[in-house]
Length: 254
Image (cartoon, rainbow, N blue to C red; front, side):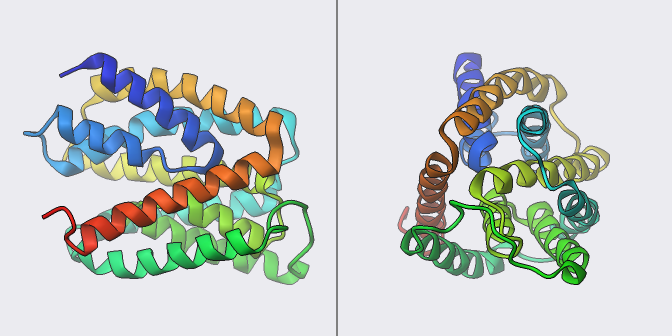
């Protein structure tokens, strides 16, 4: 086991995750390589321990600098916690492979829409009438929460897209709000994994320190460079996710 690689990977994951999500793309392959004999649920739980610390620190950093739409974020986070718990419980009941074609298609649509709509997420706008805000927050939170607990890849990207498209946030506020929801889903998943398969706590906590450092740098860059930077990195992460899922789905690795 190479601690230097794990720590460096966790730092980079924290930096990317703080801006647009997708830290699991980096941390999970590293954990799978470093601990080939450990079961996947244990490594997933370990990844969540590392991620939640960085995500929470990024959330605090954003909250000190910009106004987070707390009403929407907290309703979504509450529903996401419940959804994530049930999603994690459903892992043993449903084959994850059934999710890949649907997620791949959705990610392609999200990426294409964001790419062609150059003004998407650049300015904050009011896209929803007040009476729909709470139902929409609960719906988005529960669905994305279940997805994160069950499958996971692209959760941050889907959250940011929904916050921009449904609620009219700019990319910066969407990213900050997504962190609030991600903290909730990560905590629910940790609770689920810890009570079933277990977690490599020492590994998770050491990586969490590095993830925390990366998250501070990532949130600093997002606040400094704004919506254009977040949009660019968002598209990069979506493209990487599409490539990864395509590789797995179509057996290009055989």
